[in-house]
Length: 513
Image (cartoon, one colour):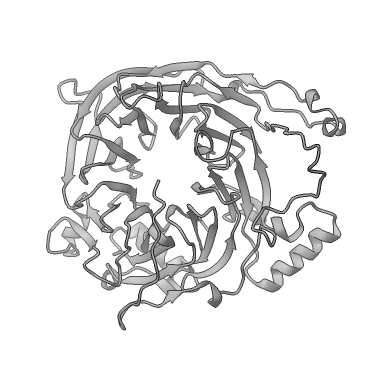
């Protein structure tokens, strides 16, 4: 995880306008004047440390940090975790597949729990269904293929890509079988399954040498179960993140060299004469363009639900929004219906255009997430804050949760994709190195609305008042504090009813919403 800073620098006259914090309508504080989370006053003279654990189940079979986690697309109870077998530099990697459905729902706790924490029901200890092995170094990337989860893929710091065939007619009858291994690079940094049903069981990964690979998996061909679709060598330093467009036609990747490349994987853009001179990409931006340059590198990327634009984040809190071309009929229809079209809709003419340059947070932006239905982009930073931008209003800052994770790095953000009711599209889950998972309700756009909500909360006697405005739930159980602690990832399914975490403390926890 990067912690680089990016000092303010002048930009040329033709650079896009940079949005600064003093230009926005609302900043939501989750800290007091001293920069701490709002907490009740207490007597520090005889303070007793009480470890909280809100989980309903746990798995402690990992011997060291759990670096990654993945969830089956059809059977969300099936969760794969991966990490290291020890703290040595050459420690082998190890992973497990868990069935979280065996964890019973926790009953509503009686009021007596507040005075007697020992009355809390004991957690369920999960047992692994399958062990992921064969890596000689840490497993740092896992993914199930789409759309049916027919394969589980693990990527390691040893450069190995190991593929397991998954057969499951029901959540209780799943079987895993090792299929094949590929080793094309020194280190696999990330994995991303292609979402297109036209290209099933396709997966992309980025490597430490800057290369990007697209592979298709086929268990029916024993002579070649791993088939290389495309290989790209355009990044000059490690490729740090990648994301597919919703239609699965484009693949956007970023690198420590501050470059963004959006690849035309299947030739759809080439058929419409929308590729760049290299014939491989629809967008190629590097630090050579001072309007795009992010000193210190890029570390996160996300494509909007309409496929109209891509957001990249990097050192010093820098975020760039770049337009993408319309390729599929589906993306064109989505863009025409979207509120985003009013200010930043992608079109062929806007492909590669820098639509916004944003600088609100003070340290590297490590996670980006678009809401599936609301006009929102959320950014998580190493400075511990979450910034939320309105994509329908020129990416104006909607909220800045300054102490979202108590000054510790925000590791991952993800909207609850299938939430119902008034909060649909507005619920965001986050995790950080403070060891806490939190869920936020991001409704409310103006300072007046925020003040009204704070007044209502205070009148109702809710803890935290304005300090916790937007926070609807938090789960504790992992050790925090950065080194040797924190939450390194989570999965939450479509509905967000259960959250499963990967802990730097070598523990996997299951929380219930």
